[in-house]
Length: 135
Image: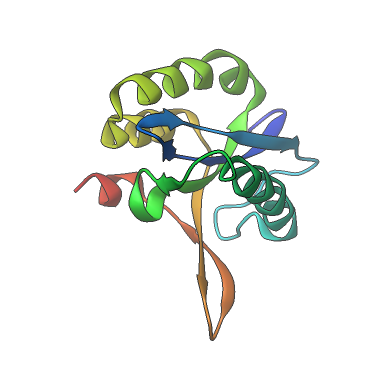
């Protein structure tokens, strides 16, 4: 049983050749079940994060650093959020090894999603199978 779940939205971006990983999060009252997605809470976090990124773009152009896996939503235990995630973040910023980053996330998270937009369906979360993303 996952105790003290947290939902994190993070972006893998690059601005003027410098990688960054802005993030925001919120504690969850209930665990997101395997057959579900972050829903409204995830959309709210996406809004907050993307406004911050939009504001950051005033300084210089920026780009997604990891294609479709550049915007991620993680269900993560508080212990891992405070303990392991900061080291994973620092390693990715230093190395840009997205495959290693996703592999490490897969080992500590209880759900990883991307958020996609298409004209017909609007916003859709997609559960990420990190094993597929690594191939």
